[in-house]
Length: 342
Image (cartoon, rainbow, N blue to C red; front, side, top):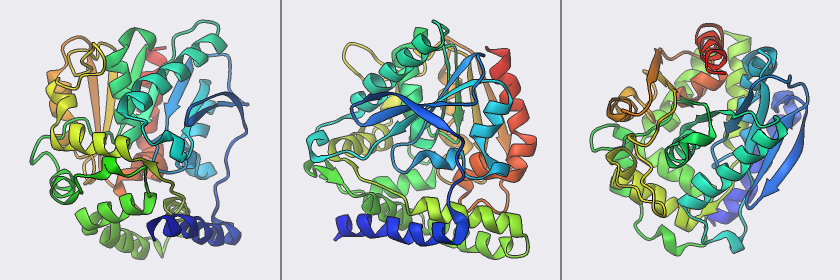
């Protein structure tokens, strides 16, 4: 039934796209492919310092390039960065054994190496949001010498009890046997999130819709976010199990006990400049899910930007990517940091 819902949800999204609410993405070409991923290189990129965006693997990546007025991709291109995006592809049943290490280290490592080769040997900067940011942080702590700086946007890094109400709820209710599933339907992940935090994934979206009604531009962004929210795909069961158990339930990343091969990618190993950006109204990645990790870092140096939520973003967790105020007031600081560390 959930697999059927996964099939029907994009049809719901297509109906919104027919109303003109689909994404308006910048031109790109695919320059590399791997297991469950492909690498976009944006056509309008300059010859400047390469920046690799690591998208979250749960939904399509066009949330980074949703509309002209609220596009991270356009912001980076206009700032003369050589831009790439790691896009995750829907897994097949042959990918059922793909694990956290396959996504966070092997795939990102291959993408980073490709970007460096294409950029003439220049070490790239890396940026991620949400789970994409968490994967990017694990990779950076696993292999810090391969990148020159890391930007994490609304990215949870600390999963200690009481660090986040969403974390506590998802740990209390998530099934323990997800590793037994070959693929976990995206609709199941959405339902778990909704049940864990209905005020975040239902009521706040309805409130945002009402508050956006008097502002046509805010309403259009909200509607485009709703279209994106229906564009989901499944994940390997073993990956979901390890994210829930090793990260959310056992907090191994922040505690420095997450072992991948012979390495322990924790805060002590993340020895690169780090910029973390957090929305104070974000229930999925609040400051308490990020600050303890930064406090535990000793090998590099970190900066933190906090900003308030805003109307017209659908979910506050997405405000840094699609919020008009975020693009006007926060992104100039992020771009400045990127150029400083280029």
